[in-house]
Amino acid sequence: MRLRLEPASARQPTTHSLGPSCSRRRRVRTFTEHALRLLYPPSCRGCGSRCRRPGFCEPCRELVLAAFEAICPRCGRPFPSRPDHLCGRCLARSPAFDRARSCAVYARSASDAPLARALHGLKYLGDVSCARPLTRILFERAPHDRTYDAVLPVPLHIDRLRWRGFNQAILLARPLARRLRAELRVDGLVRVRPTTPQIELGVRERQSNIRGAFAVARDWSPRDLRLLLVDDVFTTGATVEECSRTLRRAGAASVDVLTLARAL
Image (cartoon, rainbow, N blue to C red; front, side, top):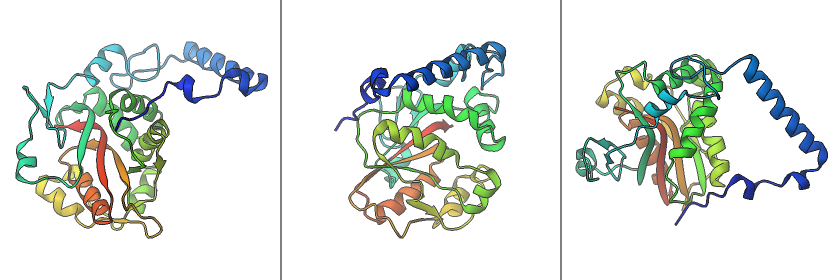
């Protein structure tokens, strides 16, 4: 099955059908955006330098969108050489999800990598303006070969949500669900207990920390649905693995994972 991504012109009403008042508002908004860019040039989310459009400058963009040489067809782990083949972890134990893909990669030790800096600004500095250029990367690099019934962001526990003020996975998943023409279920999967931040733990500690932390909402059933689970970063895969296992136990037909970045 192929994902039907139609051009924006095919999905949106024409200017004529919107009426003159809507067309006028659109022209005013476009003019205002151009004027603001002239007065306050956008800065690159990766290096902080000025750039022509919001997001990343061209050098940082090339680093963010570096092509993968080869990946594990199951979990999406990049390899330094071809051809694609199952990685050792997937050969030893098949993950609960059907397929995981990431749109970009960066080294965990490279905190100054453009994508790492943008994600840090979004998650820990509350800079929600980073969400738009990051979502654009999702649109450009997401696989377009499958159709989904629902898109689910990885949930935060209520304590973490109150502290942060927003769930970055929802900011990424909402426009993606519209693009995929799939239902967005922000409350389909819930985090039933608080956990230690995964970034502070090792591989085995992450698996133990996250075990049993999720549950399917009582007023929703994923039975026989094709689901896309969305998160910001795939590191060891412990979080999306636990989410996928929870959804499959509740009867989901399939669970794919899409993350913005893969931290190696």
